Length: 422
Image (cartoon, rainbow, N blue to C red; front, side, top):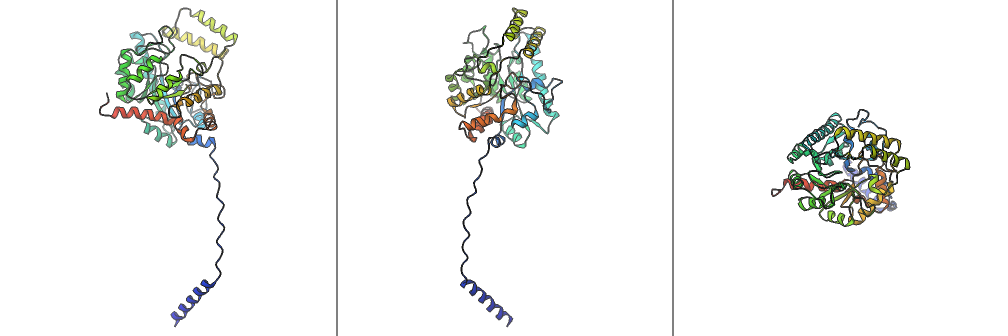
């Protein structure tokens, strides 16, 4: 009986429910408007790499600490962990730079020892701070490290002078992590012609040894860097290399006609073979600048003091005296500086010519780079803000800030792995 009454009750309730007036459907919710990401937010989620960090030159200085917020000195002290954090710089290629010297056995050996010591300083810095920095050997490594919150330490050579006359020395640097090699610097060397050696013709390209070095870089899976090289040398690199050639810190002649910069036509050639130009922020390569009368007089005095001496090929003692005097002059009479707007003019011109697939940034931090309005790496979000304002998308910026650099590195890695690689 209890079960029957319960069944009747349930049926009655169901009937009442069916007869009850239907409740009105709730009004549809107004669509929630998602706020657009700010330039700062976009910058923070990009992988931001610089292709030419001269910071290793500071690692042996007793008053420099990579973990501290060192006082910025434009062109000299612009990269440390706090500044990288504020600027969203995930890392890049840390440079083993050697000034050009005489082409003699003794000088070659000194250069090799110096470059080896510089590389060891990079390795020691990473080993001392494993929670903040990590060595990258591949593009995959770099992306993983950046995603982890650590700073990416890839290694490159600027000026292959320390390799002496034996390209097999490149293998030693490769084994310890070097993945990009720049053949030439401010003067011609055993590998080819420089863009700024006014004692030789502009038509001087790579020597036979330089051509062998390009092939060796391809064999090892290293990126070939043509910055500082003469146009003729870069053309030889493009012709020989099985992978794209990169210019890690260079500007445009159409903005400022300097030998270190390249023409619009040549940039298009470099892009056509998959290469990339990373825009430099070295004032003297961005625009014509006028020194103060006091600085001009000091420089004329320096020239007279070292009359007939080429400081780039002088002995170590003479070179040290020259550089010490130049430092004194720079401190007392600072050189004129270019501006953030002029730097952006070079970058925007390159983007106009070859698009975001072939442009990046290599400001020459700690090697003379930096301009008024972008004095150190903490100012990098300004570049992102400006590019967004110019209409470039986050996808474009991902290529400019690191994607293009990683693409070229991956192409070099793939060429090494290919069974028919030379």
